[in-house]
Structure formats: structure tokens, C-alpha cells
Length: 287
Image 1 (cartoon, helix red, strand yellow):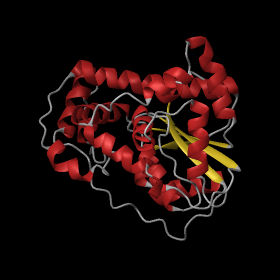
Image 2 (image 1 turned 45 degrees about the vertical axis):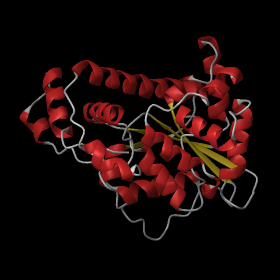
Image 3 (image 1 turned 120 degrees about the vertical axis):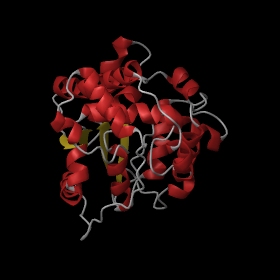
Image 4 (image 1 turned 180 degrees about the vertical axis):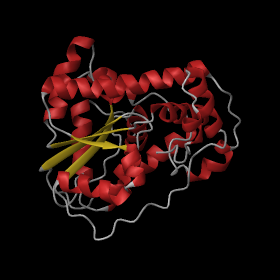
């Protein structure tokens, strides 16, 4: 792996204060599991931005049986780790080994959430990517691929998050200020967000097909409309017991008050602004 560049990632300052503080909280030892059990089973949530992966990861952690599947290869998480440790990690392998030691559940399960763009960062040059990706994915016992079918709303959600710096409802102290930030319709910026989403989603699909790796596919829409049933499928797939009652999370929406208008404008810009589409609620532009 690209150890020298990986170490440099940990020194890059995060683009948003809210994201930095949230990642510092996520990487603190207060979230570690005390068991010190060796890792016997691994799973990865393969995702792209604004696909519902944070919502799923939060539910998995709350079971106490699935580790703490955070975006450990996100540059902001690495930066937070470096801040807490007082130095950047010496290598990708050493960093992930340390994370596994601390975030493996008492039953031996460890989970990680990873965007396709995070995986790309591990390769020093394009020719290195496929073997590195294959090594990472084949180390996982279970793969969960989560995506969103309404990619227009997803692209707008991504644009809103990039513009406001508000990525999750757990940025609670920043919600009011960031939601008050006025947004302008920027067709080019939203199109770039859409391209990033499509590139990541197709990248995962191509990798899984090329390596002939099985995975469980989950949609954002399924997770938000059939929360308990969808999580039940995920729990069974990775081999953990489903809680007797899986309560829908009381999540404070991160939706910006202009989000609906932006989605409508982008649909119109793309030439797909039918009355039926415009009438669809854009609720949960979050996580």
C-alpha cells in the first residue's frame, strides 16, 4: 500500500470544522470495545456519499455485536486519529490493525464502512489499484453494497453537504447554523456530485463482478421505508442476532430548507421534471 502517501493523508486538515469534530468523537477510545478479542469475522459496507451508509452503520454498532463500522479510511478519520495519537499512522496496514484491535466486538466481529474513493487512495498508481482492492475485499467475510436509486436527490444531498459542511445529523450543534446558510442552484457543482456518485457506484459494481465476490445489496429507499425488515436482512447476512425490536432512529433531519427546490431545479435542468417526479417528497436528504 501507499504508506508514505497514506501517512500524508493523516496530516491533511479537514475541510469542515463540524466534520473534524465529529470524526474526533468517532475515533476516541471511548468508542472502543473493552474485550480485546481477536478478530474472527470481518464485513465491509461498500458505499458512496449520501447512500444511507451512516444510518446503517449506526444501527449495526447499536447491536453491540457488529463492531463499529466507521469510515476508517476517510481522510478526515485518519486526520482525527493522527490528532488523537499525536502523529500520523506509519502505514495503512499498521493503522487498520490498530483499529481492528480496538473496534472488534466481543464476539470477534469487525466492520468497516468505505467509499470507493477511499479505496482508490490506497494505490500509489492506477496499476496497483486492482490487486490492492482485491486484497482488501477478499479479507472480508461479508460485503454489503448500499446505494440509492434516486440519484438526483442523492446528488443534491451531496452538494448540500459539501456546501454547508453538514454531513450527518450527529453534527447536532451545527444544524441550525448550517441549515440557515443560503444555497444557490449550481448545475455544474451538482452534476459533478452526480458524476462522483456514479463513478463510485459503478466502480464497486465493476470490482465485485471482476473479482466474482458475492454481496448483499441494500438500497437507501429500502432502509428508510422498511427500516426493521432491511436491517433484519443485514443482521442475518453477517451472522448476528436481530434485536427483538429494532426501533426507527429518532434522527434530526439534516435536510436544508432549500433542498426540495434544488432537487426540482436539477430535475428540470436534466429534462426530467415531470409533475409526478416533482410531487415526490424529498424527505431524508441525510446520512
